[in-house]
Length: 461
Ligand SMILES: [Zn+2]
Picture (tube, protein in one colour):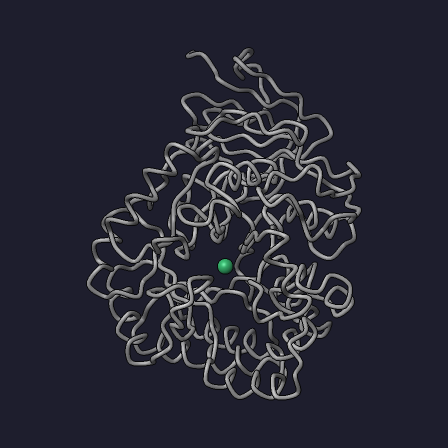
C-alpha cells in the first residue's frame, strides 16, 4: 500500500448518509480509505487523534471579501485565508468589489494568479457579471458563479465602484440571459434603489444620519427595498432560467417568495449571512453602532431565518466577511452613510453555529449541509468538495463540541484587528483545519503558508 499523508483516528465522521465512527486516511490530497478494519493503513506522515471530536467536511465560504487587489489596508488574500483556516474554512471564494473590479477575463485571471501566491486555503473568485460580452470568457476561465450588486452605479469608489452595480432592469436582464447560457449560478445582492432614495431622504431631512437611522432605513416597511428587488429578480429568473442565488436573505417576505419558487422546482438558492442570525439585533445596533452594520435584522426576521434553515428554504451560509478599519467604522457614529457596511466574520462563524447546535437551534447535520455540502453542490465542486468519501479532497474540519472559548480581538487574523463578536462566549470550536491532507490550523493557530491554496474550478458533469 502506498504511503499515507494523513490518518485521522477515532473521530465521529460526517458523511452524506449520516455520522459514522470511522478513521480516515489520505494520500495525494484525497481521501483513500474510510472505516475501521484490520486492513486500514497503519501509519502516515501525520496521525491525528480525533477521539471525542467530530470530523466535518471543510467549510466552503462562497462569499468572502478578500479585499485584494485594491483594499489591502483592510485585508489581503493571505490574512483573509488565515482567518478562513482559523475558522474551519477550506475553500474561500472572493468577491468582485476589489480595485480594479473583476469585470473582465484579464482582471479575473490576475486575481487568480495573485491568489495562487498568497492564499492559505483553496480558492476561487466570483467575478462581476455586469459586462455581457465578458461573461462567456469568464466562465471559460474557470469561475464558479457571477455576482451583481443590484445598486445604482454611483461612481463612488467603495463599496460599489463603477462597473459592478447594475440597477437598470433592462441591463440587468441582459446579464441574466448571458449568465443563463453558462449554466453557472448568478449571485444577486437585491436592492431597490428608487425606493431607497425616497426612504433615506426622510431621515436626512430630519438631520438624522445616525447608525440607528441607517439601520431603520434599510428595514423600513418591513424590508420593502429587499422584497421588491427579490420579486424582480425571481421574475427575471423565471424568464431566463438562470440559476439564481439570492444573497443576504434576511426578510420573511423575501424568504417566502424564494420558498414558493423553489417549490415550483426552479433553480433558486438562498444565502443567509451569519450577521443576520448572530449580530443584527437592535440591542447591538445601539451598543455597537457602525460596528454591527451591515444591516439591522429585527427579531421576527431572525426567527423566520431559523425557520428557513430548518425547512430547507435556506440553502447555504455565506459569511459576507467584509472587514473595514476602525477609522472607517468610527465615522459612522456621526454619519453612518459615510461609513462602509460589513464586518469580519469568517474566523468566528463556525464557533457561533456550533454554539447554536449546542443550544439546540439546529442539528450538526444541518450545519454541515448549509456550510459545506450545499455550497459544494450549488457552486459545482461536489463531490470533490463538500463531503467526506473515498475520492473526495481530504478537506477536514475537526471540531470539539465541548470546547468553551471567549472570542477576542486579540486572536483575530483579519488585518483590521477587530471582530464584532469580541467578548462573545462560545461552546464548540474547530481544533484542526485540513486542506487536501495538510494541516493548516491546529488549536486555533494557523500553520498553513501562502501558496498552499489551490484554484478550484467546476467539477465536470
Ligand atoms: Zn458581500
